Length: 446
Ligand code: GLY
Ligand code: MN
Ligand code: MN
Image (tube, rainbow, N blue to C red; front, side, top):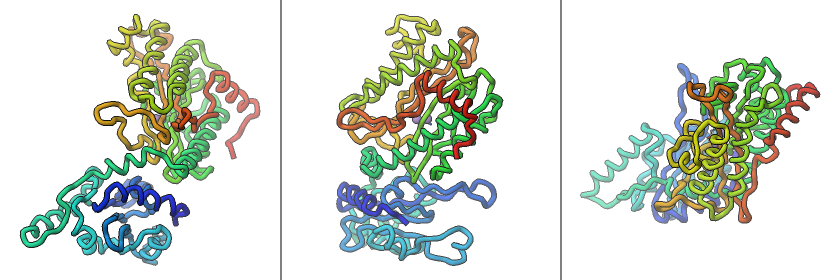
């Protein structure tokens, strides 16, 4: 049951206003087998959730703003007491209309029979062909039907448009309800990172720390981690998407945790890096200071009118390249080090991405041919890093050190609001959080 009906209705109205007399077909995410007959935990297609809050599989939303009576229609699994005993409650046709505010609902089995009535007079169909090949075949066969009958009668759309052009642009700009959801995800994730610092002890494995992080997520109401949690110790921290989390953490290792909660489909994406010993070594501190300075510089720049992928991204590159020259890991002068890309051996990703109901959220970073400018309502990550590979020719003191620091920023009219602020980040705060946890013998955060 959706408790946020007016928000979903507002989003449908905004989408409908953009597509005019076209029709949009938005299917649910397919269920995916994990082993034999057991499925991965189901996660609704984000676009369908965004427009309805309806989170059951085998459903389809059809929006037909030009239709005389049924402008929004959900096709859903019908009630079925036996199946519901095995797999959980269903809203059914009545519940879909009553609880999700659409004009009409039908059993999913009637989709093919009902679609022509909704689609016959629409000049344009909005449908995304990049999701589900099985569903694509139904759309292709529907379009073929129109083509073969066109000699006899007009009907059916002649233009196909990817709904992302409209829908994902709406999703870039967070509403007050979105921002509240993003804050909740950020707050739970902040608490999880603090718990990891305070409750970890030398001798633990990466997966034990992962358990602390995900315990906080789940116990605070998050339905999933927003993405596989990265708990990378020592040299594993130089692997960007390390997720196996099996290693025993060395006593003098850094631990890089990149983990965020997903709460009612809102994602957080936080990275912190801290020493298992409780104290940064001089080399760890030197690398950390560069990443922290790069992050601070980028955060300071985030405000409306600034080009994220040039101004903010390039600011990070400059601070990091300068730091690498100071450490002797690459050669100056700075402008040459940047032009040659020498720093990319140690910093090979960009500064961040949109964040929302998808971790790497939708929406184009470009506008026409240019990088787009930041605007109020956007949420982005700021996540510089430095990853020193364990390779010949690199100063042995720094080899295997990996540091990333990541926060989630909402762009506001006056600048930005850090949704993950308060997650310890300065060396002083990080060391204090670890020390206090150990002094207090902080157990799991209940
Ligand atoms: N956690 C994935 C990322 O930071 O982009
Ligand atoms: Mn991340
Ligand atoms: Mn990220």
